[in-house]
Length: 570
Ligand SMILES: [Zn+2]
Image 1: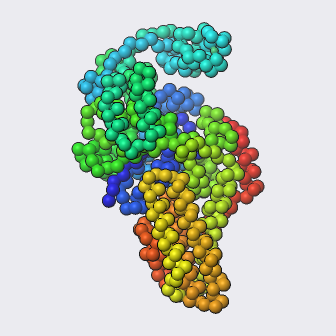
Image 2: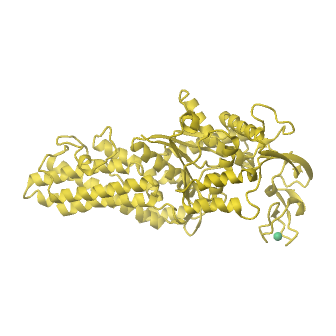
Image 3: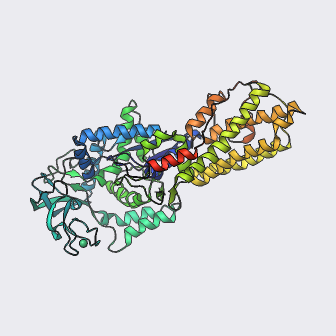
């Protein structure tokens, strides 16, 4: 039995995510977790919300709530939606958890002890009216280059010139509009990533099985220009993990918190602690400490491509720098972007379909199937309502749904609702089983390799093979001359339904469950060979005709949704 630790990039707390976010990490991670569990492997699948930073504070202010209360509410909302999509996290944690506080402070202490943290004095803009330091992009003013009057402190979006807040003419707070600003001197901690450059380089070189795209992104950040830069890991904010050196105070750092990029990935580990506390103290270190049982764990991370530098350099720098035997990632699976109807999905602009809206209009399996079978794997992909309608109707309704319906209804009419006995398999059946053996092996190969689109194509081909068999065998014609022969064909058809339920469960878990229920299967092992898999349901085994598995999306529905989602979510 293999052991798989699987994490999905953690979604930010400030609102409900769109379908592009879902397919960019959580959904393919769930596919892989479900597959590994179905193969009988031991899996710990973790995700969480990323809760710190200025955007969370501002979103809370906009909602008129204290930030802790806002985050707790949004976490519950995101958890409920994740559940609606069947995301089978063993734990959906929070980066603001006490476990993450302790662990983040612990890592900072270890890094300081190793001489990998330095203190830097910086000048930063303080807003008296807001009672807080302002991050660069929360300062607005007139651009000294082009005169645009809404330039941000980090960049003018009109002329694209990179700016410092002190460059702005008539600077003001983007939060309150106040011009009562002053520049103050403040101290921050920097992680000396530059000192870890050789260690990171050697670690990346040891990953010979990583895609070139991943290693080339990492190498670019390591070596381009002046090489890997040190990064600030603290901020002057109220909301966050207080800066401490392990269990001790950190003199000079009073009132400061760790910067969100430092504590967010540590939540991957802390989340296992949360999982343990929620499950009678289950041993989480056997997943995360190579000196405590995690040496045989295979750790896979799922993320969008923009997160690759973060997961190949920043987080590994924290772990390597600690000098402790934490489990490091074995494989990263990264994704391109899903576009929406000729443009981009956008949370800030409310453009596209959001996860809660998607579940309001259709069951999750429809979305899971379409998104996974069209996932932006080797390049960006595009969601349009036409493509969505086509994919769902053809694959789910015409191919899988239709096969199930024809077999079960024909059997009910001619033989009743039990598996008929009939003749032995003949040549046509033997050929089908040989074809299925090849395809099942290929499907498993793709799933093991996390080739999401190819897996979906192969699964679809397995459904198609059943339809083609049924069409060629034509039990509705056979029965007129040879009832035993027709009974055998239907016996095989019913067993194919059970085979499909097992193979399809990682992609469309609800439909798979409905099929297992209709076929009265309580427990099912992963099918290893087609012959034994298609003799699971013995003659005399009772079943029922399932309700229409997948309703087709009508042109009218498509047009209505096109209209409904053409604007901007407010
Ligand atoms: Zn400008």
